[in-house]
Amino acid sequence: MAAGKGTRLKSQLPKVLHEVGGKPLLEHVIATAVRVVPAADVYAIIGYEAERVRAATEHTGIKYVLQAEQRGTGHALMAAQKALVHHDHVIVLSGDAPLITPETIGHLRNFHLEEQAAMTLLTADLDNPTGYGRVVRKNPRSADVRAIVEEKSASAVQKKIHEINSGFYVFDAKELYRNIGKLSTTNVHSEYYLTDMAEVLRGAQQRVVAWKTANAYEVLGGNTRAELADIDHYLRMTKCRRLMADGVTVFYPATCVIDADVQIAPDSVIEPYVQLLGKTRIGTACRVRSYSVIRDSEIGDGVIIRPGCVMEGARIANGAVIGPYSHLRPGSEIGEGAHVGNFVETKKIRLGKGSKANHLTYLGDAEIGAGVNIGAGTITCNYDGVHKHKTVIADGVFIGSDSTLVAPVRVGKGAYVGAASCITDDVPENGLAIGRARQVVKEGWASARKAAKGK
Image 1 (cartoon, rainbow, N blue to C red):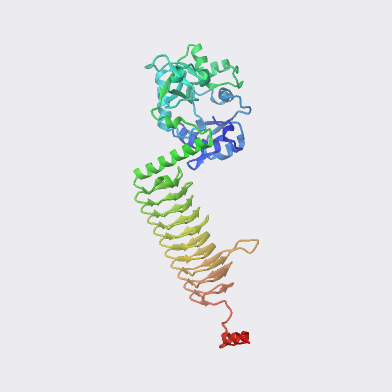
Image 2 (image 1 turned 135 degrees about the horizontal axis):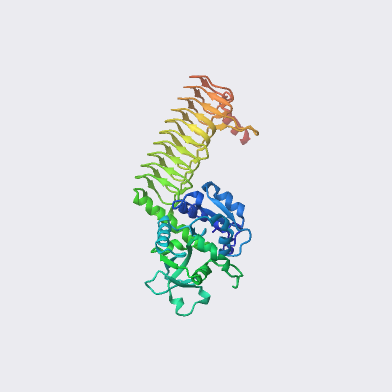
């Protein structure tokens, strides 16, 4: 269920698109659901900003049901009747509760089938159940549910119950849609509540049972900014623990931001205050030093990323050294054993095996061969104000410091470019290109100037 607005978040963004752990709440829930059933059998019931929610999640391959008018959780299942009525059983998940696990959903489903129930609730014990509906069982050892009592309607005795209704359910689809029309809107919000199906089904002589998860935290949803922050912290700490269990060293994990889909191979080291975002992949025996921010990048084995690097959509081959303070923009491909040093920016380039660009350089829209040395302060001038153009630097080239390469231009294999040159024409193999004014020396000029000032 993903149709709500989330008024307590005070946001124009749909509630289920608020991010925790590096992706929207709903995407976490979908990722869990498709590990239990095929994506073709997963439906998101959308309403508020429906097309925005669809656009953000359609890459998952799931289906959608539109709840055009949001009249409660029960009404959401009414809107989904045409899509779901031909299924034998329906598992209902909350789109704002991203901590639910496939294992818990599987246990809930299996329990439902074993008990041959019409409705099965997922419950949990909370130390502080205030605000949640309490689950009243027939007796403490029974799976059968007598009632779900909302906080405002609970008696003093019922408020002492710590078992709460999580909002996750499994229904026998036939019994659900045979009886869902009996739901009423006689409540303070004039809405159809799915929790009321427990009473409706019991009145129809159908079994309503509950299965309790041992991990109460996984049923919690993000209804406020503070709750989203708590969930994000939980997800990220869980991610760090999982990485460490798999052989990755994460120093001071509370300071690191590592998204859910990031992959890191064993024996790599992540220093404090590192952000690894999106679908970043890091190989074995790498070291990512503090204050680096890496998004959607592929990093090979044995790579050293020095402090303060920023990269997005980059690919780094084995044994390369990056930084400190390098900026690798989308399309940057850094070859095996290559070096990209301090205050170097790259965009849409290939830097060949063993090549070096160590200082204060901009390389954009360029193909650079193996064994190339790019001197400090070099610039590839790739933009003429209308179009981007390519610079090609062949193997073994030496580019002197403070050179400007005006694209489109090619520097041939083994050629040299003299320092401070502006290169506008192709340079042949093994040639030397110098594009600067000839130096003029006027001996005694400074002395004469000082003497003139003294008069």
